[in-house]
Image (cartoon, rainbow, N blue to C red):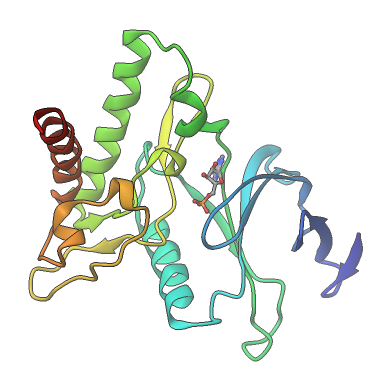
Length: 223
Ligand code: AMP
């Protein structure tokens, strides 16, 4: 561990990545990684709560990364709902615009992603409650004109008390009816037909994904 930037920050190695974070965030441990970088759990010694710290590695290295970082930050800042991950703090250890390189997002910490939970033998009540919370989160986003575009188990996190939140807004965008939106949105298994075919789409694209998957199943069974 080394001190830097007038003693406000310290650096710690997490896997292959160096996290330079405010000293209030201690006990960093890697808990996941996504397209934008690594996520760690940490203890916020000021608030006395566990948090998740996501490092956006060199968000300005190209236009795609810059857009993702911008979308994630702007959307997380303006959304306030119990089924959407809450942004607690944002900081950069660099001191000037010229040096500006990394961005850290501090969010409330959850226990696991749905990837781990779907292997569990859940009862009907818990499953319904999880589904209900997913729908509440999506409804809130759609009522604000936000399309997530990358909903998948690893972007849905839960706590042991069965509360659930949606995260990762790097591919989200606000709905706009006037122009074609990008057909290239990652994670093909969860992609809706409108997105694959480069057609116009809006908020209900997520429901069409379900339609697409069930239709694939039906077609497969019939042929
Ligand atoms: P992301 O880059 O935001 O897609 O996050 C990558 C992975 O880190 C997710 O699939 C989760 O497993 C984990 N993760 C991200 N944020 C949190 C959080 N707030 N609480 C718990 N785990 C998280």
